[in-house]
Length: 373
Image (cartoon, rainbow, N blue to C red):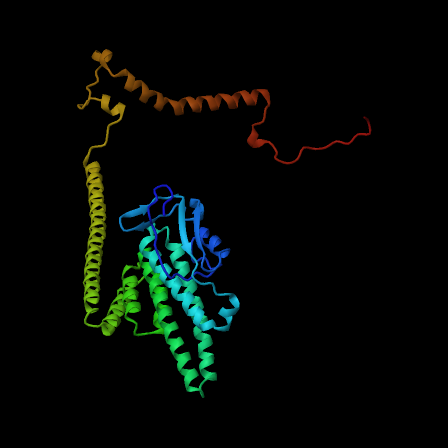
């Protein structure tokens, strides 16, 4: 019960607890470890040895997170480890069935938004592992007891019971992973079920659900899984298969529509880019043609020239365009000026005896040797 409100949040009977296997919360396991047969214990626990941040529900009541709790437990029977070893198969079936029931109870009342997932999976997986070991040992015992009909019958019954419990645990692991939205892990658990029993309907239908919700699955895989489940379904189970088929068709149709929309959007985007490029090329061509038709800009000199030829007359020499005439006159006179300057330079060189560069020798200068320093 909740120690703060004295409200019962958990009530159970005939629960088999294996000390050291973490079947129950730490507070209960520590109390049971030191208890004796026929004793009734009152155990108070801090929240960290109970449910911690997680919660537990019972009917309309929900145990708050970090609640300190109190347990009242009665020890009905204690089985020593020596006795368990003597009848290993019997007590293994008892312990694994209790683990499965504890996990089933936690799945309903201790999920708490996924916080109880790890404990639930631990119990199912622990039970499945012990049952697999038991089945392997039963296979060996069956070969040894082949000549004894009574022994063979007993081993066969234990084997059948262990197989049923193992399939239940594996199927429940698949259901836990589905609830936690771990679809790939759920498919893997379903595969283990079908390896043991290929016609197991729970394994087939949960494998189909996991494949449908797993993004990595193909539609062919989902379709094959649903068909396999439909082949093994009874009349009462066909409703689940039809519901799954309807969901599959809806998802497939939505996917195809979305793919078509994406393809159309990509196609329109590509066409828009091509049209834009064509318009840009056309605009560039029109711009180039316009530029060709436009007259070239006139130079400043040409712009200042009159359109009609001037009539030069000495009587109106003051109105002549002397700026234009001066520019042309300067250009025409430059050759005559250069010729005059060159002729004068030659005369000056002849008078002074300087030989021009073109008449000088290009060889090495003579060297003189002297003993004087």
